Amino acid sequence: MRIPQGFSTVTPYFFVEGADHFLQFLAEAFGGVEIGRHMNGERIAIAHVRLGTSAVMVSAASAVFPAMPASYYLYVENADEAMLKAIAAGSVKIMDVATMPYNDRQAGI
Image 1 (cartoon, rainbow, N blue to C red):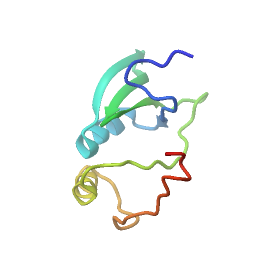
Image 2: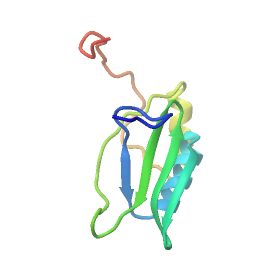
Image 3: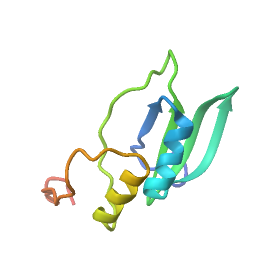
C-alpha cells in the first residue's frame, strides 16, 4: 500500500455541507494549512489539510457522499487555548476541557 507523504495509515475524511466554511474553520480554530485542493466545477471534490502532525481530507457533501456525523480526538499542546480558538471560530462547546483516561498499554505502546 502506498501512503502519500505526510499522511497516516488512517486518515480522517470529512464530507461536509459548506466545505469552504469548514476549511476556514480548520485554519482559524486549529491552525490547519491547506496543502492541496481539487475542484469539480464549483464543488470542492477534495482538499487536503495539515493539522499539526496529521493530514485530513475534506469534500463538499453530495448525493453520492452525503454529510455524515463522526467524532474525532484532536491532541493539542494547550487544550484551554485550543478550546478558546475553536469557540472564537464558531464551535459550540459541548463539554469542558478535561484530562481523559488513556492507557498506553492498551494502545500497544
